Length: 403
Image 1 (cartoon, rainbow, N blue to C red):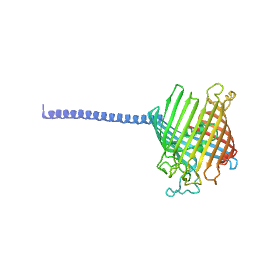
Image 2: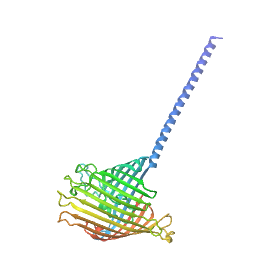
Image 3: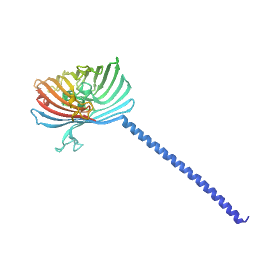
Image 4: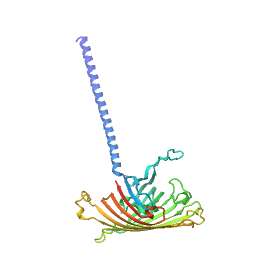
């Protein structure tokens, strides 16, 4: 064999060896690329599933109430009463977070200068505030922890503030007793029998303040070292009858003046053949301010109490099923309600008139679905609270919804 042929065979042998190695190297690189692509895809699927899981566990919505008010002694007007944005997330089986932002008559509330907090005449006023913002840590059915900003459970309204659930165009307890504070509480429920449950709430909050400072506290500071305590118990029978009692106690001033409140209500939604169309609420509240050593004699009051009671009849005429009022709706309802409210506040200073109010309201409602309602209401007021819609005769129309 000639030298040339030997060199040619050696060259071909080296070429094929190198080519084979290149193919192996290319195959290895392809495998690594495919593996990386699979890992990226898996990571993307995981992120998508986490996002889906969060959305599955999270409710994002709103509830609102809009009214037309024609009260004796004031201009008739449309009232963009409230809009609340809500985030309610059970992002873990034992942890829940709830946020409720309140836009009250708010068309524009930002200060023109954040340093001086000045507001020009072009600003359209209103309130934007944190209504509630808390987290629940679920330990057991009978023992759970809540911390953050929440409505202190003094009244029926403070545990059911959504106007879409109401049977009237307004709720006087909203103006009188609505009280949101920052603190912590324990709450839970125990089934005493198959048809009777005992429920409780017990906690502490920042507490009320003396009136010249504004009766409701800020969420970041207190005017004294003491904290206010509250408690609430309620018993539910057959998911039809609810008995509620609540109490509140704490200092409200820097010189250790004390206040306490006792409230309670009974609510009945009987499921009997005769009474199943009726709902009854009977509620009372009493707040006492101790004025021993009082500094602010001109504004502090000795006590105030409120009574709120109503009877509502729920019905639906079957001949309306084929009309636009009943068509396409599964369970529409009409409601006819009568309500009586009594409010009295006695001031310490004899120069300030005591507040006395009696208000009687009749309301007709139409609820095509559970989360949408319209009401026509006329109320007769006799009082001097300074709130014309309660003190004087008032015609009111409202629309409330939630989603």
